[in-house]
Length: 283
Image (cartoon, rainbow, N blue to C red):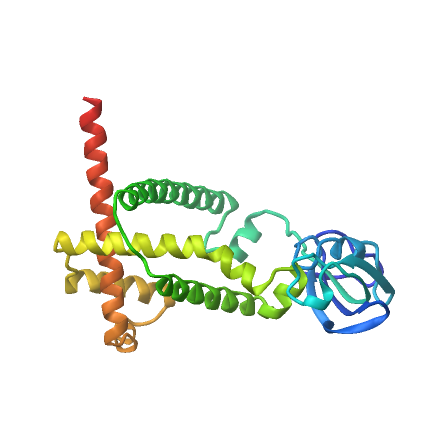
């Protein structure tokens, strides 16, 4: 990462800036930030904001003019024109290293660039194969759900939406954003965000109920040997001893893992059955 003190902001740069927003000359609550990290062109802020920072130099005062969306979550700001007084404090640009054997040694366990490239190709192929497998499984599950009859209470959907919103908030926090800042800079509202999540929440519940029913009907049980395999994978992933993983997993977490593995086994079962049906049709 390179620092630049003498050139203007360009698209793709990572900057830190101070800003304060005004409507009709009056500062509004939640419209101020200091040393805020922003990647220009990321679309993190209100449409039109980031583009107006292109060309700004460190220490310069820049006025950014935007209009809040009509569906903005703050009633007093809906559709209002605003001026943000900004100052860029820092400009950083990613430096692309030369691709050679030394680079391969620095970023991987390989000694040559050719070996590193071969490994990348192999991993990309493996990822594509997994994605294709997942796409087939999703299609089969969708068909199973379409043929099922379910009456799902709104309370269950609401609870799933709440969990998804909490997970989304945690992911934002890991990126240095609060939910309030996300909504402010994108024009999203809490109600609109939750409403957008409902179809996916309903789909997840339907998939889970159908697959749990299949696992129960087929008497799918997860053996201790299968659990040990999963513990070993987790130990490798988190670079921990298997015994430590088992120690961390309480009774509820273990049962949840068994349930997840049973559902995956149900997915594999109906996918294999679908393959047999397709093969029989082809004969």
